[in-house]
Each structure stands twice: as structure tokens, then as C-alpha cells.
Image (tube, rainbow, N blue to C red; front, side):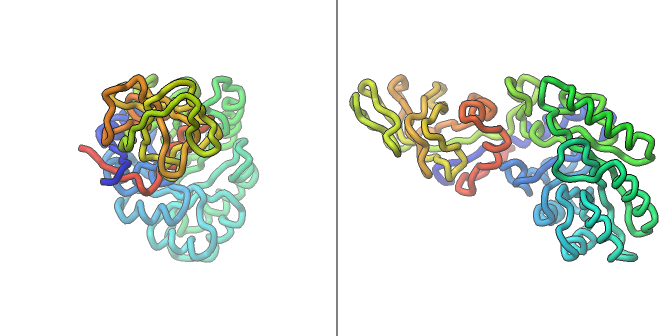
Length: 357
């Protein structure tokens, strides 16, 4: 194992699926594992979740192929669908479920007569990113119903601000989706993690938890533990050298930190190449021997400097918690003006993933 590692608790992952089930007891669960399962490790997470969820979802066909290599039977939704004819044929061959979000993708299904494929149709309810309008959804479903080789698995929508305490926009988007699609005899999917937690009317036939599977709350001002989730990942790095620095000494690139007094300073073998955000002036903390230590100066590519003056028993080689149970990733994100999603998915390949039990 290298100088940085992430301990990933499989039991916590499964526990969090149970929280989803309790929140949405009448819905099927499509686990979102895109971006390397939010940085946790795609194949290992899929193996762990497979007995406990009904489907998986990723962004690209390449990710979907990796899921299919592990999970042979359950649906694998591809949020960005297929880019071209080659990827469409890949979806057919590997039994992937592309999400159709453009007229072009719908029209491409004419070119595979006799080859069975399941699809999901995306209805744009206000994200303004991908998806079909009300009229386009109607036309697409009419066309697809005439294609014997195509099975429409669901219609989905994507909230643009379901984590916002003001639900005006979310309620408007939900109403738009339901008014257009509720009369259909087809499965519907609308709820992401934030909506699973705060918008029960949106649960419908399928929910799509992402962030909350990993023990993180998508809503500002709260952590996963606030809503009964367990943190899944604990990220550690080794404490390298320790030195005393004098008042007036500067630390880091740009000399942005100036010591105001004599300080005991330690080097942590974890930098922005490993996934910690780089700012002009760092404001975060880490945990050493159960105590918080401030990050001093700018985070470098491979390391960061921390204040150990108040932790006299810290020694080189000690594990340093970068984020985890004692330092929630939501807090790290907030102090670095980032999103928890961003922190998790930035975890670099040099960080060894260790799964337990």
C-alpha cells in the first residue's frame, strides 16, 4: 500500500441501500455508480450492491461495459445513451439500456430491425440539458411502440434543484412530469438522492440514489449521518517529515502562509493529484491522533503542510484522516467551496482502495 489509501466499508454501503428502501419502500432502486462509483471503485461497488438493488446506472457506454462484466443480468442504464451506431450496437450486444434524450437517438433505433434492445426515454422537465419536450416524448413513445424489437423500460426526468430547501421549482418540475406521464402504463423515474430524502411524491416506480449510497447528504448544511446514513469511505495519508519553523517563515507555493510564532509543522503525503482541492489559501483541516490540524499554505500536487503545534505526540508515519468518519466529506467540500460529489470523484488513482469486510 502506498502513502495514501481509502478504506471502503461495504457494510455501510449496504446499510445505506437499506435507508433508501425505507425512504422509498414501494420503488425499485437503480444505483448510480457513474464516475468510478463516485470515486469508490466501480467493480467492487457493483459486486457489493448487486444483491441489494434492482438496476445500475452510469454515464457512458464504456462504464456500462465494466458494470456488465460484473453484473450479468440486471439492467444497466446509460444516462448519456449512445453517441453513434457503433455504441448502439454495443448496447444491443451487451444488453445495456441507453437513455434516449434526443430525436437523433430515437431515429437510430430504425437501423437495428430484429435486434432486441431496452431503452429509457428522458423527459426534460426543466434541467435544460438533455431530454425531450412533452411533444417529443409523446412522439417517441408512439414510434417506439411500433418497433417490435424495442422495449421501453421507463420514462425518467431529472430535477435541477431538488437539494434546494425552497421546493417551488422542484414541485413545478414534478407536476410537469406527472401531468405528462402519469396516465401512461409505463414505469416512471424522477427521484435522485435529494428527492428520495425530501420529495416522497416523486419516488414513483424507480428511484435513482447516487450520493446517498456513499453515506453523503446532497443537501447543504447537513451530513449523511444527519439523515441516518453511514459514511462509506475513509481517506488516509501518511504523515511524513516534521519540523519546527520560526516566526516569519513562509510555507508553500506563493508563500501564502507566514508563521506568526514558532510552529511544529508536518508534511502529509496527499495533494491535489490525489484529490484534495487546491486553493490560493487553504482553509481546511485534517485529523491526526483524534485531533484536528489546520492545513497551512497552498496544497501542492503531492503533499500538504499542517500545523502540529498542538499535537505534540504526532510522529512521522502516523495515519492522517483527510476525510471520513471524523471529518465528513461534506465539511471538506464546504471549507473548500466545492461539492461533495466533486471531492469524491476527484480521488486519484494513486490512492489505494481497500475494501472491508
